[in-house]
Image (cartoon, rainbow, N blue to C red; front, side, top):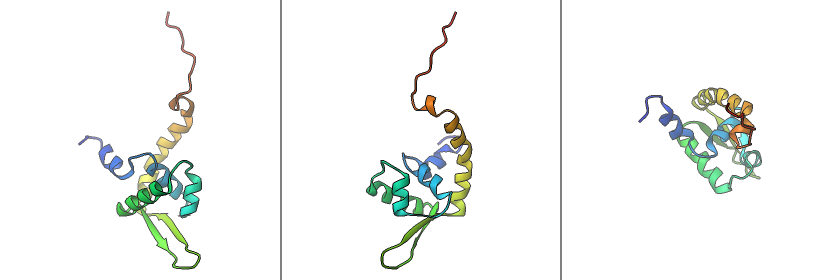
Length: 112
C-alpha cells in the first residue's frame, strides 16, 4: 500500500484503456460503437471487459433502451466524474509533453 492513494486510483482505472474510456465518457454519454471508434486498437472483448469492471466500480452506468435495433449507452456517474476531473492536469501534462513522453528524440546538449 502506498501513502499517496495511487493504489486506489490504479485499482479503478489501471491498465491501458480505462483512463481513455473515462476521458471520453466525461464528454457525454457514448454508445458502444462510438467508444470503439474513439479507441482505435482496443478489441471488442477488452472494451466489454473494461466497461463491465468500470460499471462494477460505480464509475459508469449502462443504460439499455430495450429496443430494436439494440441501443445501449454508457455514461459517467458522479463518482466517475470526480475521478475524471482529477485526471485533467495529467491530460494537460501529456499534451504539453507528448513528443518526449512517446519517445521522440530531442537533441542532447553537450555538458562542458
